[in-house]
Length: 423
Ligand code: ARG
Image (cartoon, rainbow, N blue to C red; front, side, top):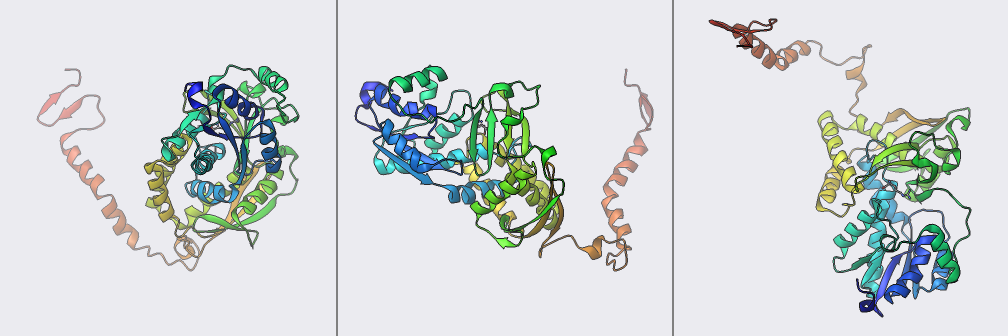
């Protein structure tokens, strides 16, 4: 983009309140002459939205919005991922990844309302998030142009601080953290600093949401989660709204050291990275949901759904949330959740979250069929006939091949003539 061409136009900036996006407000004005509209989207990260808005204006934003998107995040992004048991590479519940498309949706809504020509975000050139932002913007508003200051400027952190000092940009004086973090309702991600040494155990200060498992309470705590149509609706018998339920679970499970994940991850941009996650509620809920599905879904649906889950997860991770394929897979997943209702009892204890009991009005598990005790309803005489038919193809194959091939020799002996493999 040519700086001069943009004079007087508007840019909507995804404003987190951190150093990078604070500096970006001024930089977008100085470099491109743009009118900056700062947008902070609350997806459950700890922050004071009113303060963010005030600071953005002090820095020079023409307008600043604070949007509470927690409910929408829980219902339209977290729950579809939970229904799909989304765990990237079997480990990461996608907490950062699924918040990005929602943040973009909010930015686009503001851009349309304000008649902005540009959207700006603070993602770096090495991460997945730039892909998620750019691709989602393209999917929702292809005519908007994208500016990613962090991909353009060459300032180090120290230079940014100096730029802020010279330009009198108020930056948050928060305790210096050696990590790059991202937080929302579904989890906390941390990387950089000593965490980049994949051979070493993360120091305790890398964690903020969870107690060290060994220091968790000495007594296990039992909780009961009620599901309806694949989503959690109650905790310990009390009906709760999605956001409150997730927040409460983060607190309870975090206290027991549940949800710590140390993951060597394959980024979409081809880099392997070491990520530390804390996702207590996600670990409990996905574990409980998987468990309940085993009780109520038939075998073929379960195994087919696991393939769909894998693809869903990769699409969400790879920034393709707004793709027709992801949306279609979600439609399939929604259909599978019709009977995923019931309760799961979980034992939380020193870092583990174990389902220890489950029940559902739609349970396919039937004691009278499963039992080896009295009350057994299974027709034992039916087994023989079933196995006769089930095994028929293999017996047929064995008989046909045996008449022609003598097994157990290194050469293949065909009746009538002898042919050695080496010939
Ligand atoms: N690797 C994760 C993802 O791509 C999390 C990145 C979060 N960013 C951070 N600064 N820790 O979804």
